[in-house]
Image (cartoon, rainbow, N blue to C red):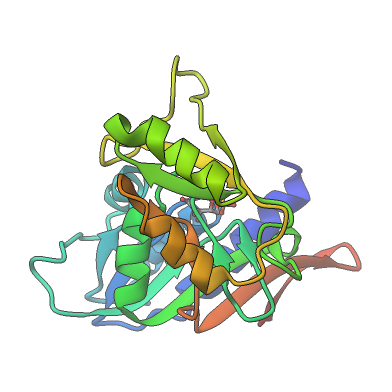
Length: 233
Ligand code: 5RP
């Protein structure tokens, strides 16, 4: 990642953290952009700019970061609402529909992000696409014993499935729930809402990374005249 790209992520992560109000329950997303949001939330708590927030993590990554930056955590058993969730995305279309799951955390992210009163997505401008699936495959979390039949079912739907392999870990990526992830390329995703349901209907699929009709606001980090800027969609 270039220094400018880092600054862009930092700016957009900070802009999202600035939208969090005191006394709120906050869904903490996963990824390199929301890592900055978590860092700034911790700093705002420390400085007193923000008081009495509790976080609900969407992954081991966000749990570890929240602890590192001093954000108290809770669970969905202990609260009956989430006021705001902030999360990254791998693709965003003009209707604010998303592909998520680049960090294999889309199942927990979907639970938390869909429950939030307000859902803010933080991305850099490279994630904005005209049509979902243009550059990023759809991540599908699968229980391990169903891997082969799910792969075959996805091929019948016209998708090209590939088991996600670990980096600096031999063998497949294992999710925080102990499952595997299949990344699926489709020639064209004309109806994301329908594809989301169809994939989830395959026995053995836990959840896929298509998020439809849930995003309230997208904050986009971009470089304008050599300077990092944040704009809204
Ligand atoms: C994890 C995700 C991430 O939010 C998504 O991959 C974006 O990550 P980054 O901010 O590092 O680009 O969906 O499952």
